[in-house]
Image (cartoon, rainbow, N blue to C red; front, side, top):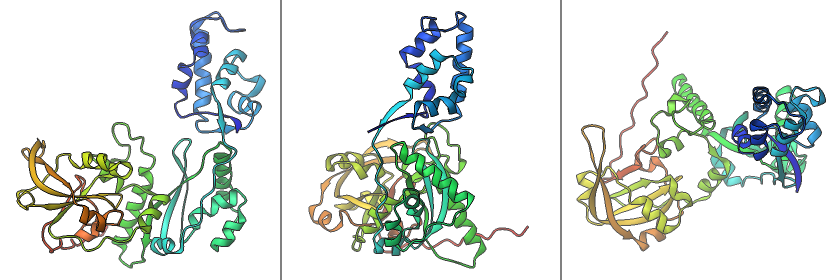
Length: 386
């Protein structure tokens, strides 16, 4: 274990919850503090401003933290406040988080050409975007940590020394020195070149949205208006995917032919849930039409992150809620238990939206397949000439 000094994203809350900071603001009992409470408040505000400019940074010594945050002994923050703040930044971390393992060849083949983003977990910022194939997504981390053996085994070369590369390597080293690990996300994968400029522009836009979606605060209104009105399920389709999750998806065998009729329920929360919790999640109200409700023993396939988690048989339906859109559509909750035979065939296999003729899962998560007829592809409208 090592001791480091890290400025957390919620630094204001961290300081205001500190008894020493509360004492500093409400009295002058700490050594060498000003008698005037307004001056103490001004000094605290100045210190908080300095810290806010360094959110996410980690320092390996108290001297380095003092120098970078407060300008050393010549700074304007009084010693008593400075020491109190530095004590609040102390963090104990492991010597170093493990570096990524090589991707299996079959995963690399399925990824194809891809765009990736590297994310700093300390402040959830994207600090590098690149493109490549195979294990290219890991080359900067392996290089920064001096793990040349993994580069050689993966058939990757050390990145060229450019200002951009050097900046990324420095950032990666500070992340790992802080006890964290860089997060790797795939923004777009299995990219195939096409001469259609409109298609290329659309794919590029989707990749940009996926990358920017990683930086959303997920509190209240979206900064990126492309995600406005998105639910957790629909937003997951439009944001980048952690490489570890893609590996899990691509490692799963494709599901056998889906039963007809059936309904696929997309429930992302089910990916970390127990069997009982999956059933509870699947029992929420759904926009089940009369055709689906009229099928006795309708198979209900629950999917999370394209992996089948459970299969049930609907033996009945109960009206459960009414939406506010379109005059109030009635939502229904199905009654039924797990189907052991179907679960043996489908659980832990992969089902993607295209298996039902869809480009992406519906935002409400309800994807029926009541006949073998698939939706016709809709032609993409061409952009008007300028």
